[in-house]
Amino acid sequence: MSWYPRQHELLRNVGGDTKALTVIADPGYYKGEEIVDCYAAGIKALVPKVDTSWGKARGRYSKADFHYDAEQNEYICPASQRLTYRFDSVEHDKRLWVYETNQCTSCPLQTKCTTSNAKRIKRWEHEAVLDAAEVELKQQPDAMRQRKRLVEHPFGTIKHWMGSTHFLMKRLPNVQAEMSLHVLAYNLRRAINVLGVAKIMEQLQVA
Image 1 (tube, rainbow, N blue to C red):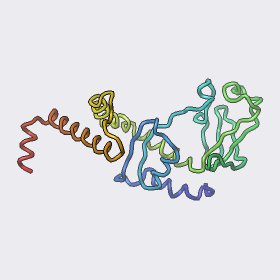
Image 2 (image 1 turned 90 degrees about the horizontal axis):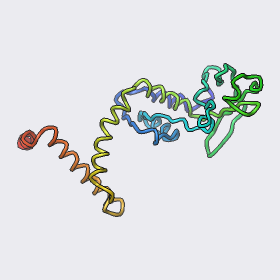
Image 3 (image 1 turned 135 degrees about the horizontal axis):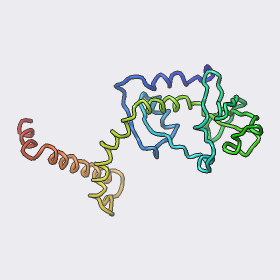
Image 4 (image 1 turned 180 degrees about the vertical axis):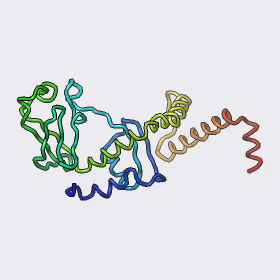
């Protein structure tokens, strides 16, 4: 993989310092460019990837069903055929590598894969970082459950308190102040429910 000049540096940050900042987000926030930027900045990003491919929605194989062989720089399809690197491409300012096989017409799985005589797959130049990040997320199966325990209760409670009006203030500084008050109120109420008023008053007097 010597033709990935920046990959080695980025991959060192995946699974690196266990004390580094870790961010956990819902699948709706998945964006490859932002995940790569996180690891470039030394931030561990755990975000599940959702397969939204056109073919998958119609019952066909998607890119996720093709295994990437990093040593050979090839993709292996569900029928064990290899898609070899053919050329580079640039789409939406992203550099892509294109892999292809022309063995589809004789393949018994063609109807589940493609309507063309050849199958083509594109790979982003920084996709190795995304692959490594996905492996790291699978190694931490409790990460998303922990996120739900920490985030969903405050989010749901505050949203319920705010009601249908949501933010009453206008302009970002005012909205930030309003949100800070909501968070402060939540934290105080949560502390009262968990510790009780007497314990909180005792701690305040010690401080």
